[in-house]
Length: 271
Image 1 (cartoon, rainbow, N blue to C red):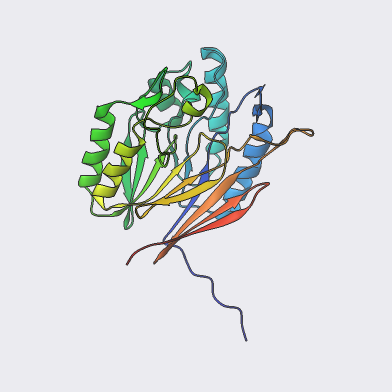
Image 2: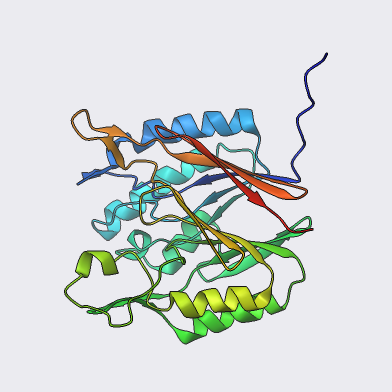
């Protein structure tokens, strides 16, 4: 009996996040990024994705000159990929560079944007992040943009945002929990309600938290992906080498996480 034929995906994408290209800072091994990006571009050449998504934090902010140099160097790796590269802006990307700088270097909009690929709507959410003593916030205008974009499509939507949206904010924010508040948006509940009300969003992928994590809330799947350069083994300073292949089929999305930790996420799609 011959081998079972492999299903052909409707969409194929490469997903990478939190590259932190540059010097080593804490557990972020930015000096390993050139070697790891070479590996990623070679893997993408074999995989042949329809597009690649970089979910932000391409660099580790130090100063405007070094940040621009690192982002431009990183762009040379992405230019080797024979597919469009779509980007989301991370918090490190605008520490010393402006949104206009990001747009000029990556060629992608600095504001939130979207496009259609086949039967799917791709949404890249770039809200302005505001930080205060109580955590991270977004402006009402950015939530309004999200609502308007989703109301204008009848396609199932794959959404990409740098900061995960599946966090449940505490009823009473504690300004003393500074570390925890760096990783989530205070308006997560409101944002998820917009996604749920649209009836369009099936998946939201994020980075920022440097871990692989999956959750499902009211029918929407949320996936956070590990950083490319996050330290996996401290003693030997070995990076996680993480990226993923996202494949959309009739009735299913498959996310194949690569790197030091590998796993598959199967996401069922309603007819």
